[in-house]
Length: 306
Image 1 (cartoon, rainbow, N blue to C red):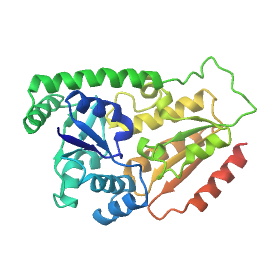
Image 2: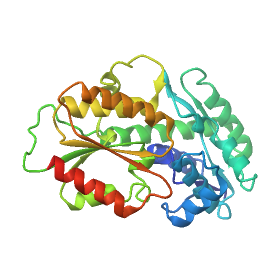
Image 3: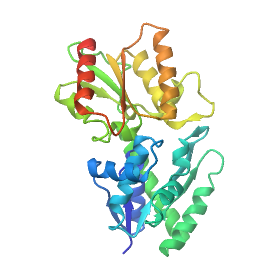
Image 4: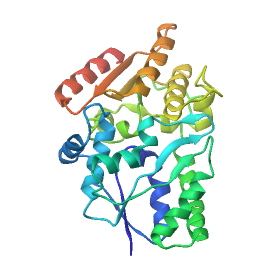
């Protein structure tokens, strides 16, 4: 039986249900890399250039941690995931970048996802993947269709943000945690931020609590324009939480040298400055960030919003 490795980084946090279900449907064994730790981070730093953002470095570390455990490592090539929505350039070339940086030490399977301009590429990729795994094309296509149904049901169940008819509990602090999913949900990169806030009985909202349509509608003034998919997620989430007065403040987690975040944060801060809006704390993380200083900034912010 063929064993497929799934690196626990980048879009894994958004689409892991889809790809795990897909390879299970194909009859493959799946090995997911361990949660991010210092060893994985150090390996990523070793194999990536200094100019690469922290999450991409960590991703390389996850790939290396799987190298001797699997037959193939799956690295999807995300270009666009919806109409007018494009990913970071690092994602567009991630399979090639990984193969080059790791000097072809791993066998990589990839699928091209370009929904905006060339959606047929995913079918072409499935045909190639079927050849590599010695599986019929129709079987591979059906496996992805079934996995997608499971994925959409899971996604719908997580959209549980209902502020419009609710009354905020004034005795309890509520915060929105914004950032790329691989920053928010990777406990090592986020310094266990969500866990620490939960221990303090603070209500937490993330972009996953809002459905995609609401986020796109509220991503003013970029609706209908070509934009980053993560940009729509973060702008729409920030403006949705603000307009409904559900949260007391926003914590924005960003990796050092993220070009997309440089723009998105500027758009959010400009909107907030032009109105009597929420306090926002920007926390920038890289491989040298210390947890003590991180926690001190969070404590000071909680004192302010509390």
